[in-house]
Image (cartoon, one colour):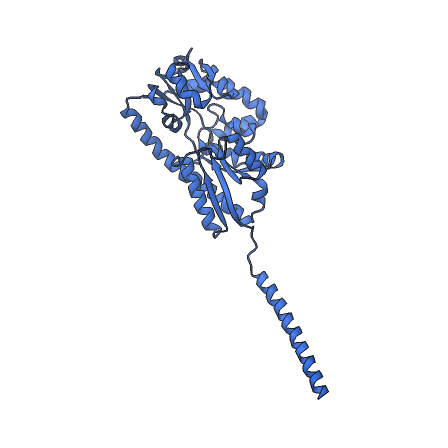
Length: 342
């Protein structure tokens, strides 16, 4: 009887051991079937743009794609209208990682911003032509190393044009006029070269400055001019298209590196589609804005820009060479005017 009981105890022990072994194997097998990925969660995407603006519509498409393609692993919260602070404040938050992404006109380094030199880039697509090259890759690497951020795409903005109370067809028409410009050397030097008197004024004070005659005119993308109501106190628009400057989709690099390669590609693809969606809306909006301005009896001129290009040649050459060196500047000039349809 004792032998029988001992045998039963030994059998139970063996079965328990086998059961434990199977449980461990089952756990290992379950882990091996999981798809390795990032932790996921909610990410913040902030911007200056307001709801309804083309750039914001592009961001909404970005949100849809990321949430769908990551299977809900990530939720994207959008913060329009500088809700999270000024552009500079948002940039600092992205660098610190308190927000993951932002969209703004600040690319993070002067070498990129100077692509805004007058008549250097022929279109938003030419910006992409440079940013997606080995030069753009080098700049992104510098941003990553120095500031902990990278740019993964752009959102389009319209070319910068001039509004005034004088019809402007050539640079001579700008002689002696006071134009509000942002406080950047390339803006100031551009309007000096065109014969105007550049007057830096905070954007928030611009409407009043135009209304009271402190300045005679200003320059901005058409969508900004209309949204700001500037044509209530201005009579003319000249489509000089003197600068292109898109918005940049900037991401915290530590966050981005924490994504899987597949997720990183989803974010990049989402940025590209956001650009395409925003471009379509921007084109539609521009056509409507032009029609609305004509109905308001705003005089719209399309000057021959060759004279404007010639007048600002020294600005491009001097600041471009100072920024990048002669060899790289010449290469950027070629890329900025390249036939992209070939």
